[in-house]
Amino acid sequence: MKRFWLVLLSLGLIVAFSASAMAVDVKFSGEYYAAGMYLDRTNVNKTSYTIPATFTTPAKLVDEGPSTAFYFQRLRLGTDFVVSPGLKLVTRADIMERAWGANRTAPGVAQDVMSAGTRSENENVAFDLLYVSYVSPIGMFNVGYQIDDVWGTVWGNSSNPKGKIAYYFKTGGLTLILQAGKDKELSRSVNNPLGDADKDQSFYTAAGIYSWKTGEAGLLFKYIKNNQFRNIASTPLTQDAGFTWDGLITTPYVKAKLGPVALQAQIYYLYGEQSWEGNRALLGNPPDVDLSQLTAWIDATVDFGKFYVGGSLAYVSGDDPDTKDEAEGGVLGGGLDYNPCLIMFNNDLTYWVGRQGGYNGSSNGGVMTNAYFGQLRAGVRPIDKLDIMASVSYATADKTPQAVWDSREYGYEIDLTATYKITNNLSYMLGGGYWIVGDYYTGTAAAGQDVDDNFMVINKLTLTF
Image 1 (cartoon, rainbow, N blue to C red):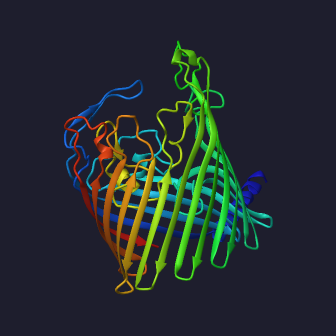
Image 2 (cartoon, rainbow, N blue to C red; image 1 turned 120 degrees about the horizontal axis):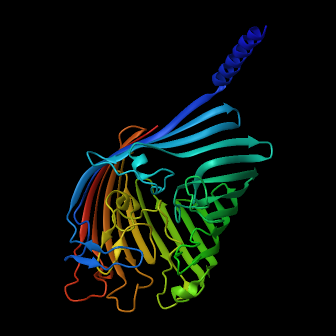
Image 3 (cartoon, rainbow, N blue to C red; image 1 turned 180 degrees about the vertical axis):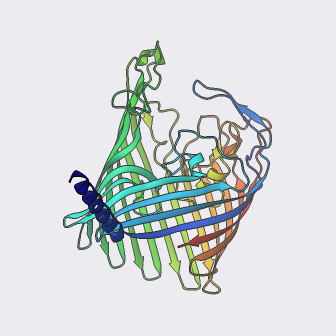
């Protein structure tokens, strides 16, 4: 009898699981690109020099920077498991994100740029997103690894996967958003047995968006509690020395369409405090630091059909080295998603080639920081499938790293790109950029510290599905 019930139960489970599996609808989406690039200078300094070692970093040789050329690719695959109307499991993975024929990156533990996986995992398969999405009668709930640091316009966006809980409620043209999540977790755990109590970085977000027929506006508040640098200098002499900081980011934005004119604008402001704790006397009694940082961006494009013109202005506050108790820069930036030029402030170039160094530790790469930036652009669509665009950009620093510095000028860049739509899902881009390197990269302008201009050529095939 017991065997009979066991067989019956097994058959019941098989039927139940089969029924559930049959009810799941799987949807795929994604993007694949393959690109080839030539960069004339991987550094812009004309002569080699060495950056001296510090307490936390070893000495580094910065050579003249030879040219480089290679092909690279990435497949980004999104898979949604639709369990029932309003309920789904969302996943996304990056697959074979690597340069053709290049050595594989050694396994490590640090997360890759805008990824939940390591660089070596991204060169094989790295899952970035995994969350459940449930549309209930009182709003939508998303729980798990989702995209964060994206809000409003492209300005300030860095599409970082983070573990968080998100709630969305929409009524009419108004959408309300509440979120809570983790940026960093260094508390004691099985894979961090030397971790300390409450050593993490958490965030809490409240936001609202109002949409109308020709635009939208939004306001977001994000509170960040950063405890990940507790005990950062802990030694037998500096027991428990470290710092924490609390900050509130406020960011309003607006997007509007006025006839042929598309306008966008966004501001970020960070206010907070960095507080030292533990025995900081043995570290020279560094002062607590007030955080006050600002970024702003405005963009306009006028579309005449076959022709369009536009321009952008951007500002990111830089840190004044003379104010030790204030941090006017260093946290906020233009964002990893914002790539206004092919060379200057291009995060894709930094990811595949690295930063292009100048003298005295100066370099181009990563997000736009410490900058005034302006760009004019114009484009033509001679046929429906072809878009040709040219742009001229200029950038200068808000602050210099030290009092003795040759110039604030980052330089000018002239870019030309052409994108041809082969099919609705397949496009090809060919582009070139010339960077007239500014004297900011000559550093302190000591004898012999001269820089060369730089240029690049890129072509890219992109498939979307």
